[in-house]
Length: 64
Image 1: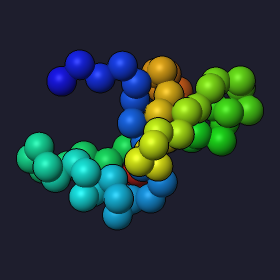
Image 2 (image 1 turned 120 degrees about the horizontal axis):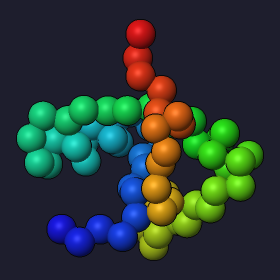
Image 3 (image 1 turned 30 degrees about the vertical axis):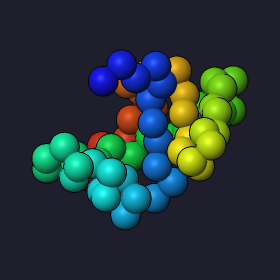
Image 4 (image 1 turned 135 degrees about the vertical axis):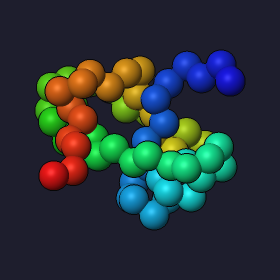
């Protein structure tokens, strides 16, 4: 696919459903609040998916 943005789900259940379309999903938690506070831009698509241009590694929160 030729995606232009990172697609973000609002909850884990939604992310799981979308992720399993292409195999076994891996879900990462993104600190979107910090991204927004740092001035990064989010867009809301017509189908209510949140988009952003990129997610830097320090915004990814890995489960412990």
